[in-house]
Structures are given as C-alpha cells and as structure tokens.
Length: 144
Image (cartoon, rainbow, N blue to C red):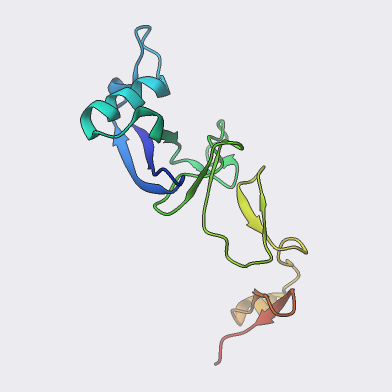
C-alpha cells in the first residue's frame, strides 16, 4: 500500500490517504508517484501536485527496515511539507530549536539531550526535559 499526504496551499498536511499499489503503477508495472497523484486527483477532487507520497516506515531520516528513507518522516496531520528540502516535519517544540533537514527533526541549540543517566536514575524514571528559559537540559524525576 502506498501512502499520500494531502497538502494545503500553506504546505500543511491535511490528511494521509492509503492507495492500493495497483493504483500507483505506470504502464511498465512500476510504482510511480505521479500515477498515484493522478489517481487521487480523480477520486478526491484535489490537485495532483498537492498529494505527496510518504513512507510509513520512515522516521527521523531513516527507514526502519534499513531501506531507503522517503522524505524525512511519515507525514502526520498538521505536519509541514518542505518542498525545498523534500521532507515532512512536525511542529516546532520550542522557539529556540532549529530544524535539522538531514534528519527532518527539531534540535535544541545545544544539541541532543544528554545520555548520561545512571541505572539508578533510569530506574527512578529520571529523564531530561528541555528548559527554554535557561537554554539547557534539566534532569527531572517524577514525585514518588
């Protein structure tokens, strides 16, 4: 099954539709995005160029089964389609974060969250949370 994101005129994902593989095959029997786009235009009254194929198996710029990643992330409702970088990405979590167009993910200005929790901290469900005010990763532990 092929998945296509329905894109608004402001590049937001409105919905994701599943199309049978047979409805996306060209005359040579090869899956072709443009054939799927034409099928969706005929059956959904939405312009072909506003349907963008997405991969259910792609997240963070990688394919979960080791295949070829398609467009950064599987498109979700409310995601943004970035035509220039050929990626889908989610909502920006904090004002200071920047988009990594290679992984199609937002990153803090100081990098990924630390991975230095001790076994005891992990057992206590301690984790890091971004603190926008201080611009740092803070350790937090839920109350006992």
